[in-house]
Image (cartoon, rainbow over all chains, first blue to last red):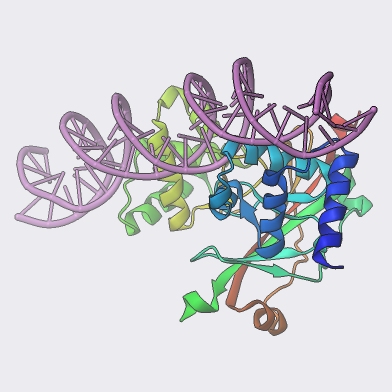
Length: 142
Length: 142
DNA sequence: CAAGTAGTTGCAATTTAGTCGCATTTATTA
DNA sequence: TAATAAATGCGACTAAATTGCAACTACTTG
C-alpha cells in the first residue's frame, strides 16, 4: 500500500464517522506513522511543533481517534497516557527503568479468560490485558 | 509473627537505611497492612485522616519506602500511581473497566528473560514485569 | 538523659497533565 | 459557492504531583 492510498483510506474512515480530515488530525496520524513508538500528548505537541496545534485540540483528537479505532491508549510508567497506532499487531512493551526507552515485544503468550480465574476473582468477563517488562537497555547498561 | 515483632522489624529496616520511624511512616505502613488493596496517595491521605499527614510528606514517604523495598509501585488505569506492600507475593491485577475495582490474581505464568527477547529488543537485562487484565466485575455486569 | 544534628515535616508556591466553554474558523456537502 | 456541522484556539480552570524552606523531631553520642 502506498502513501496516497493510505491517506485516502484514513480520510475515508474519518468521513464515515463524520470527522473532518483536518491538518491537525492528518499531521497527528502522520507523526505516529513515522515515529514508531508510543507517544504522549506532550510528545505529539513537540513533534507537531511547526503546525502549532493547540493542546486542547490534541487531547480531543487522540480521544476521538481512539474511539474511532485508529489509536490505542496504553499506560506506560509515568504520569501521562500514551497512544500508539491501533493497526499494530497486539504486542507488549519493554521499558528501560533508567531512561524510559520503550521497545515493542511481539508474540504474546498471555492466556486468560479461564473459568477458574473468573470464578475466583468475582469478575464476569475478561476482555483484554496489558503486559510490560522492565529492564535496562543496552545503552544504559554501558 | 505477631504485630510487635513486625513493627520492630520495620523500625529496624528503616534505621538501617537512615530513615526515621516517624508516626507518618508507621501510620502509612499500617494502613497498607490493614487495607489489603492498592492505594494511591489520595487514598492514603483519606485513610490517615485523623493523623493529618501532609500530602507532600505522603509523596515523599511512598517514594522512599519504595526505594527501601517496603512498597511497590504499580500502574493501574487512571491518572494516579498506586502502591501496595512489597511483601505480598508476586501477583497481577484484574481491573474493572467500568468501576475501577481491583482484584488480585495469584499464580503468575509470565516467563521472560529469554536470550532471544533480549537480543531482539536491544536490552541488556529484564528485571521484572507487570500484567493487568481488564474486564467487567460481577457487580457491574448485573 | 540531655544536647546536637541529620533527617523529616507542613506550608505555600509552582509545575504538570488534562478539561471545559465559547467565539471563531474550516472542511464538507449539496 | 453558500450553508452548516464540526473543529480549532484561547483562556480559565482543576487535580495531581513536586519543590524550597523554615520549623520540628527521632535518634545518636557523650
